[in-house]
Every structure is written in C-alpha cells, then in structure tokens.
Length: 199
Image (cartoon, rainbow, N blue to C red; front, side, top):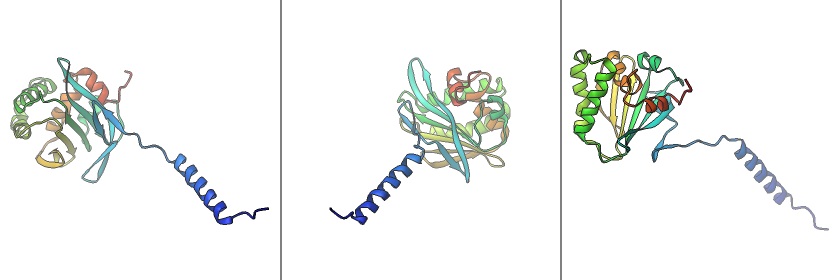
C-alpha cells in the first residue's frame, strides 16, 4: 500500500482553501454604459465618490455622451443633490463626433438657461469661463469631470488634467441643474443619473 504523500496532501488542502477564499471575495462589478467603461468610484481631493447612476444623452437618435453622477452617499433626491454643499461630481464621456465645440457651447447655455429659469446674469462670467474648456476642443473619447468641492468650487478636468476652477455654490447648483433640475436636458437621463428611482 502506497504511503500518503503529505506534501501533496498539503498542496491539495492549500489549493482548496485558496479556491474557497476566492469564492468569498465579492466580484467587482464593472459598469459599462453606451460602450463606456465607468469606474464604481472616483477620488477627488481625498473624497471618495461612488457612482450613483449614469445614462446616455441622446438627440435625434444619436448617442452624444454618457453622463455619470458620483456622490458621497447614494441619493434619488434631485433637489437635495443640486442644492447640497458637499463633494460630488458629474462625468461626461463624449461618444459622438457630432459634438463640436460650438454645439456643446450652444447646448450648455440652453441647459443653464433652463436650470436657472433664464436668470443667467449673476453667473454669466463664470458660465463663459466654463465654456472656454469646450471651446478648446471636444472630441470623441474625451472625458470631462465636473467636480464640486465646498469652499473651492467646480473643478473642471479634461482627460485627467485640470482645466479651470469656478467658484460659487450658486454656479454649482446651476451646472448640476442642467441634468437634475425640474427642467433637465433629458428626463430619462436625469432618472438614470439618480439610479433609476421608481418615483
């Protein structure tokens, strides 16, 4: 009778333990929307923000960009998110070559107007500062991160590089209102960014 090989037995035991351990590790859930891979979280100035929801901005059957909302805590309350003086971010991933700097500028101004009820004058100069980022160029594959930090303002980055910082909670409210106000740029996109709440 063959004597048991204790080294082999130990190897089998360790392999089984490893497999059991791997099964206990929760699988990382990758989020892909409109062909864009989205991170489950982003870190802005040491604040970890989690993906709250994301959707596709469409116009005339064209998929223009993917908009993603990142928050410190999950929320379905659009008004609360827009008015909150807390860290959060909206990420825009450009997916269409139909978006040009001029078209982006026009659409953004229309969005600000809808979000503020046409009261653009108090933030007009800051809107112009924001639009300069798009005027510098918009191409398929570009990623814009609009991150709000209390006491700092909206930090705008393009493809990981900071472009400008725009002060004021009032500006942040108007900016986030483009997607989350009572008159959002697209209702089903707003719902998707809020995590598709039933109400």
